[in-house]
Amino acid sequence: MAAELPDFYRELAKKRHHEAKSLSVAEQAHRREVNKLTRPVRDVVMQMQLTTDQPTVGNRAAAAAVVERALTEITRLFKNIEKNASEPKYRRIRTTNERLRENILNAPMALDVFLAAGWVEDGDYLVLPDSIDARHMESVLHQMERAVFNYRNREIIAEREAQEEERRKIQAKVEAAKAERRAAPKPTGPSVRAVQIGCAFFAQQKYVAVTFCSCSSPRCCW
Image 1: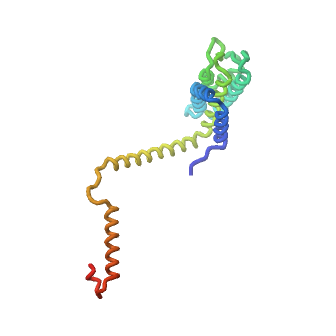
Image 2: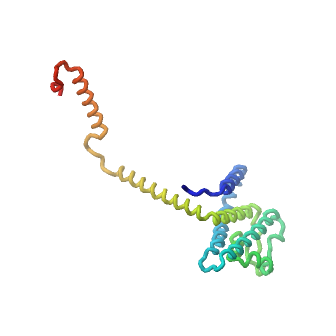
Image 3: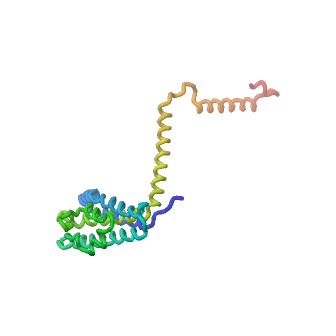
């Protein structure tokens, strides 16, 4: 029996679907473009979490705690920007800040998350350009949310992907067999169905002859 993903996955998909339905065609197109731009965020966050599974990591629980704390702080920071997109103070952070380094930047690939989200390095600062709006940050947060969810359910997702790959292989074999049958030369004799109909007709006639023959022996009806 295939493992089931948590209800959160379905609820998240429903939420995004209903939100998309309320948008105009132009807004939906813009949203798709933004999602393409922010897709690297999901990949980086996934790789960031996978660093805790490396054989070289000594205390995996401690490494996972560092990554989780960093992602929590990054999410909080990005949500502040989403809610206050016009506030410049949220768009410029100092990388030498001790609290920032301790809670975020000391985690592996934490800086890469910022860069994938659109931030740029400016000396000792990370700056978010004015071209990055609230919709962009909303998509970034969505990509981070998906990456965290995929990591926590990676075994179930891997099992489902393996099942889907097996289904594709079986379907490919079925299609190849169909193509081979279509390419094969057609038989020249009567079809099996025609032979079956002929045999049934002969049996019916024989039965009638035997039933209604006036002689005492059925051999005359053969």
